[in-house]
Length: 125
Image (tube, rainbow, N blue to C red; front, side):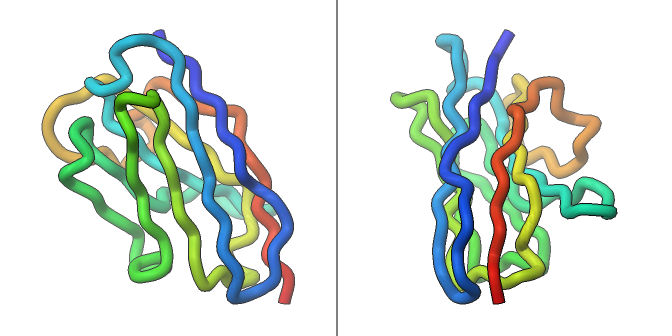
Protein backbone atom coordinates (compact mmCIF):
# COMPACT_ATOMS: atom_id res chain seq x y z
CA UNK A 1 0.00 0.00 0.00
CA UNK A 2 1.26 3.46 -0.91
CA UNK A 3 -0.16 6.79 0.16
CA UNK A 4 0.60 9.85 -1.94
CA UNK A 5 0.51 13.47 -0.82
CA UNK A 6 0.93 16.30 -3.31
CA UNK A 7 2.13 19.78 -2.49
CA UNK A 8 3.44 22.85 -4.26
CA UNK A 9 0.36 24.08 -6.04
CA UNK A 10 -0.72 27.69 -6.00
CA UNK A 11 -1.45 30.82 -7.99
CA UNK A 12 1.11 32.03 -10.51
CA UNK A 13 1.14 34.47 -13.40
CA UNK A 14 1.46 33.27 -16.95
CA UNK A 15 5.09 32.60 -17.77
CA UNK A 16 5.90 31.68 -14.19
CA UNK A 17 6.99 28.41 -12.64
CA UNK A 18 5.88 25.99 -9.98
CA UNK A 19 7.30 22.72 -8.69
CA UNK A 20 4.87 20.10 -7.51
CA UNK A 21 5.98 17.39 -5.11
CA UNK A 22 4.45 14.00 -4.49
CA UNK A 23 5.61 12.34 -1.29
CA UNK A 24 4.96 8.63 -0.98
CA UNK A 25 4.69 6.55 2.13
CA UNK A 26 6.15 3.07 2.26
CA UNK A 27 9.56 1.58 1.74
CA UNK A 28 9.11 0.30 -1.79
CA UNK A 29 8.55 3.57 -3.64
CA UNK A 30 11.54 2.79 -5.86
CA UNK A 31 9.59 -0.10 -7.39
CA UNK A 32 6.68 2.12 -8.44
CA UNK A 33 6.10 3.89 -11.72
CA UNK A 34 4.72 7.40 -11.27
CA UNK A 35 2.62 9.79 -13.22
CA UNK A 36 1.02 13.22 -13.06
CA UNK A 37 -2.49 13.92 -14.27
CA UNK A 38 -4.62 17.03 -14.23
CA UNK A 39 -8.29 17.91 -14.36
CA UNK A 40 -9.60 21.32 -15.31
CA UNK A 41 -13.15 22.42 -14.45
CA UNK A 42 -15.66 20.83 -16.78
CA UNK A 43 -13.04 18.65 -18.45
CA UNK A 44 -11.95 15.06 -18.17
CA UNK A 45 -8.80 14.11 -16.30
CA UNK A 46 -5.83 14.04 -18.63
CA UNK A 47 -2.39 12.52 -18.39
CA UNK A 48 0.47 15.04 -18.16
CA UNK A 49 3.74 13.19 -17.54
CA UNK A 50 5.09 9.82 -16.48
CA UNK A 51 8.33 8.38 -15.16
CA UNK A 52 9.38 4.80 -14.73
CA UNK A 53 10.57 3.19 -11.51
CA UNK A 54 14.24 4.06 -12.02
CA UNK A 55 13.73 7.57 -13.35
CA UNK A 56 15.55 6.73 -16.56
CA UNK A 57 12.47 6.86 -18.78
CA UNK A 58 10.02 9.74 -19.00
CA UNK A 59 7.20 10.79 -21.28
CA UNK A 60 5.00 13.87 -21.65
CA UNK A 61 1.78 14.86 -23.28
CA UNK A 62 2.46 17.11 -26.27
CA UNK A 63 1.06 20.27 -24.70
CA UNK A 64 3.68 20.32 -21.92
CA UNK A 65 6.76 19.03 -23.75
CA UNK A 66 9.65 21.44 -23.34
CA UNK A 67 7.95 23.20 -20.41
CA UNK A 68 7.40 20.50 -17.76
CA UNK A 69 9.94 18.08 -16.31
CA UNK A 70 9.07 15.01 -14.28
CA UNK A 71 11.66 13.56 -11.92
CA UNK A 72 11.97 11.48 -8.78
CA UNK A 73 14.23 10.99 -5.81
CA UNK A 74 13.76 7.44 -4.61
CA UNK A 75 15.91 8.03 -1.55
CA UNK A 76 13.38 10.65 -0.46
CA UNK A 77 10.31 8.72 -1.63
CA UNK A 78 9.32 11.79 -3.60
CA UNK A 79 8.39 12.60 -7.16
CA UNK A 80 8.38 16.03 -8.74
CA UNK A 81 6.82 17.96 -11.58
CA UNK A 82 8.72 21.12 -12.50
CA UNK A 83 6.43 23.39 -14.50
CA UNK A 84 7.92 26.31 -16.39
CA UNK A 85 6.44 28.83 -18.83
CA UNK A 86 3.02 28.21 -17.36
CA UNK A 87 -0.05 29.15 -19.38
CA UNK A 88 -3.62 29.85 -18.27
CA UNK A 89 -4.66 26.60 -19.94
CA UNK A 90 -2.45 24.73 -17.45
CA UNK A 91 -4.91 25.69 -14.71
CA UNK A 92 -6.23 22.49 -13.13
CA UNK A 93 -6.10 20.23 -10.12
CA UNK A 94 -2.95 18.16 -10.47
CA UNK A 95 -2.80 14.59 -9.19
CA UNK A 96 0.12 12.26 -8.79
CA UNK A 97 -0.38 8.55 -9.22
CA UNK A 98 1.73 5.46 -8.65
CA UNK A 99 1.63 1.77 -9.37
CA UNK A 100 4.09 -0.98 -8.66
CA UNK A 101 5.59 -1.73 -12.01
CA UNK A 102 9.04 -2.42 -13.43
CA UNK A 103 9.68 -1.51 -17.02
CA UNK A 104 8.44 1.52 -18.90
CA UNK A 105 6.14 4.38 -18.13
CA UNK A 106 2.38 4.21 -17.57
CA UNK A 107 0.24 6.82 -19.30
CA UNK A 108 -3.32 5.56 -18.76
CA UNK A 109 -5.16 6.44 -15.58
CA UNK A 110 -6.59 2.93 -15.23
CA UNK A 111 -3.02 1.60 -14.98
CA UNK A 112 -2.53 3.35 -11.63
CA UNK A 113 -3.90 2.02 -8.36
CA UNK A 114 -2.70 4.75 -6.02
CA UNK A 115 -3.63 8.42 -6.22
CA UNK A 116 -2.97 11.57 -4.24
CA UNK A 117 -5.64 14.03 -3.17
CA UNK A 118 -4.68 16.65 -5.72
CA UNK A 119 -3.23 20.15 -5.58
CA UNK A 120 -4.67 23.21 -7.31
CA UNK A 121 -2.60 25.07 -9.88
CA UNK A 122 -4.01 28.37 -11.11
CA UNK A 123 -2.28 30.38 -13.82
CA UNK A 124 -3.49 33.92 -14.30
CA UNK A 125 -3.21 35.75 -17.60
